[in-house]
Length: 174
Image (tube, rainbow, N blue to C red; front, side):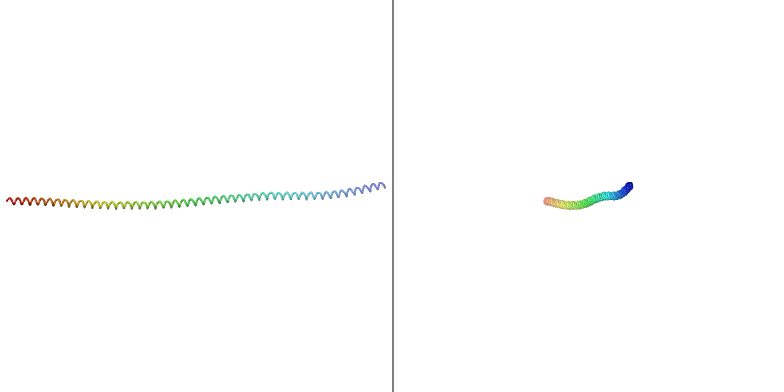
């Protein structure tokens, strides 16, 4: 019986060891499941962090691109505005030059008219002076002729008187 008891005790110890091993195995399995769940959770967390990281990068790059596109669009808008301003200034200056040119032409035409009027007035004045001078010459010539005629008439009268006096003397001699 001692042997039986020792055998029974060994059997009970074996049974207890098996039961403990089964519990340990079950605990190991539960620990493995927990470790796998933790590992899966860790991987999901890392995957989520990686996705968040790339989403963040994408968002930052989109923001950067949006800012850059706004900057580019603003630059283009500014360049277009500057170009429009240059075109407006050019057209305005061109218009001002054309107006100035037209004013200069009109002023030149006015000046030419004034010069022509002055020239024509001068010619009219010259013709009037010429006519007055010719009248003066004609009057002077007429006076000279009148004077000559008077002188000739007087000379003729003197001659006639001398002739008549001489003829009277001659007739009185005879």
